Each structure stands twice: as structure tokens, then as C-alpha cells.
Amino acid sequence: MLATPPDFDVLIVGAGISGIGMAAHMEMKAPHHSYAIVERRDNLGGTWDLFRYPGIRSDSDMHTLGFDFEPWRHEKSIADAPAILEYLDHIVDERGIRQHIRFGHKVISADFRHDDARWHVEMELADGSRTRMTANFIYLGSGYYDYDEPYDPGFDFGAFEGQVIHPQFWPEDLDYAGKNVVVIGSGATAVTIVPSMAEKAAHVTMLQRTPTWMFTRPAKDAVANFLRKILPEKLAYRITRFKNIKMQDFSFKLARDNPQKVKDALYKKIEKSLGPDYDKDTFTPPYNPWEQRLCLVPDEDLFRAMKAGKASVVTGHIAKFEKGGVELTDGQFLPADIVVTATGLKLAVAGKIAISVDGEPVAFNERFYYKGCMFSNLPNLAVVFGYLNASWTLRADINSDYVCRVLEHMRKTGATIATPVLTPEG
Image (cartoon, rainbow, N blue to C red; front, side, top):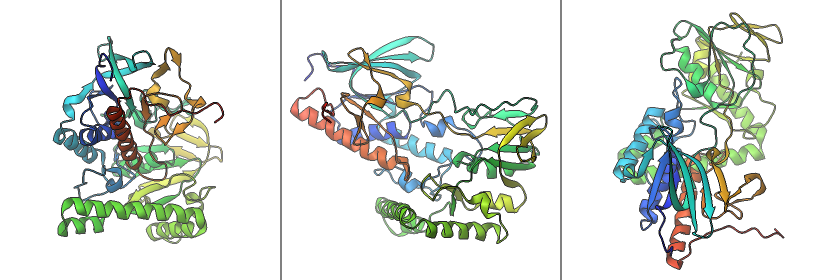
């Protein structure tokens, strides 16, 4: 036991899916520990509140992106951001978590001091002032990317006279009705934005340097919705969750063992959507399925927009930006009133927080990641990083459960420090 208790036993950084999940697990499995959630923004939800681009949705089904303890009740399992935020709001209100959230608190630095077995955390408030807080344990649910600065590929927009938009900072008043739009990128964000903007724009072109493997599935899970009608809600959710986890695992392993079979299946689905005359090269990356994450096309929305002539996919390299559009190295010209740079996110370890131990800065690249949760020789700190080939929350749930067991073990044994130790010998 600590002679003088810290402000909180656990400080959770971030009120997105990871942070809310940890708080819910603590309410259920570590109720003797006090906690606070500090969130730099004015709203909860993390990614799902930050991004406001047209059509923003999950690219994982909500029966696995949702938590193991809270059923997903919507008819659509591929959900848009408002539905996901509604789900998170329900959890924080139903489980008494909201009262523990402190909005407008941006963590600047955290120093663990062995002499009092606690983290000394400095935060910046919304008005620019600073405040301090202490906690025995820190749980970083701050995501994996930089909230302030997106990835910049270094484009020189030169003579381009139109608007340039990055999805991370989407203007609320953007009017793209009747305009030509070029979306640069071929990842999940681009694949989401293109069909949504195509509903109002004159034409939307997805400009990709390299194709991405794409797969289609219905936004509604017919099995899940049927089970909800005949079974208790929680049981129906658990069965659907089990089904989807097994299907994800099977698909991933099949792609590793027999990539050509998976390629053929993906091609067949695209051909069903676009017809036999589609350009196969446009949808053939230079790598096998699941060597990088696949892009979901729910209800064939991208392909339907292409078939209707409202959207197209072009593969090429940018030569320069002209007054009215984009010129490619092969001579093609793509007219554009608006360019959307869906070129990715800038990675940020531990939310860009300056982490130190007894005043010595921590270099994460010099430490081993222990159980996908903690770091070697770094006391009382856990970080969430979700799966790459499955839903983020599946890993976040496991991490939360593990940390709660660590906290309970510490409480029962009177321990104040928990450190994954890597000896010099390895």
C-alpha cells in the first residue's frame, strides 16, 4: 500500500473505444480501484468524433468492433460514425463512466518516480493553463496516429486553384454538389469517401498509386438480425461475434495458405458487381491478400457508383497539379474542383506524450512490447494497439482484461509496481 495515495489509482488517457473499454472493464473487474479518464477533446469517441468526412463508417463489423460485454443493437453491422457514437454514449451513461471523464485535458508529460511509486502527469487545459495529477498506473488508449497533423506526402499543388481537403480536417460547410472531385489514395478512407461524395458530385475519381485488395459484403448481417429475433439479445450477440471471429480467422489463414484461391474469390465478387469487362489490373495489388489489410466495400457502394458513371478508379503517378486538375506522368489529366488527400495518417507513439522514468526519457524503440500491452522495464503503464488483421476492439478487450487482472493482483498482494522485466541477457 502507498503511504499517501495518488489522485487516482489508474489514469486512462483517451475517451475513445480503447479508453471507454478499459473503464468499463474496471467497473466490472477492478471496482476497488479509483480511475479518471482524461480526454484532450471536448467529446468522447476518439476517431469516430474526430473524422467528419462524408460516409465515415467502420470497416469492421460491429459484432467484433463492439465490446464483448455490450451487444450491438443496430440492424446494420457495418455502422456509420453516428451509430458508433450512440453505442459509446450508451455505455458511458449506463455504466456510470461519464462522471469519470475530464474533457479538455491534454497530457503533455508523464514521469514515473520509484520513490513514491506513481506517475506525475502534466496536462494542458483547454484555456492553455497547466495542471498536474498523480496516478499509480497509466493506461494509454490514445490511438496510434497524430491527431494534430496528418501524413503529408509533400505534394506541390502549384497552380491548382481548387480546394484541397484532408479527411482528418473536413470542413463542415464544404459544398461539392455538381463538382469534379479527385480523391488521392486507395485505402479505407478513400474507398469510403468516393461513393459517398459521388451521390452529389458531378464525378469522383479515386487516384491510386497502387491498387488495394477489395472485398464486398452486405452492411446488414442477415444471420445476426435473424438471431436477434429468436434469441435473447446477449446470446444472439455472442453467437454472431463468435461466428464473425471464426470467419475472419478462417479467411486470413486461407489467404496465407492459398492466396490464389482468395484472389480468385475477390475477382469473382468484383466481376459480379462491375461485369466481365472490368479492368482487372485496377484491382490487382503487387502483393497477396492480407499481406496488407483489405478494404471493405459494403453493399457494393463503390462499384455501384462506378457502374453508374459517377465514380472511377485511375492508377497512376502525379506529375503536377494544374489550374483545373491533376496531370499524371502518363499524360492523363484528371479535372478537379476539389482534391481530397486521403493519403494516410501520421503515426504517433503513446499519444506524443513525453514519457520518462525517474526523469530519464523513455525510448520506446529500445524496448520490447510485452503481451501486446506493456513495455519491457517500464513500470505501471499499458498501451493499446489493436489487431491489423481483425477488429481493433478484440485486442483492446484482451488488454483491458489483462490489466484489470494485474491491478487486482497488485491490490491483493500489496504490490505498488508492476514491471515486465527484460534482463540484460534477454
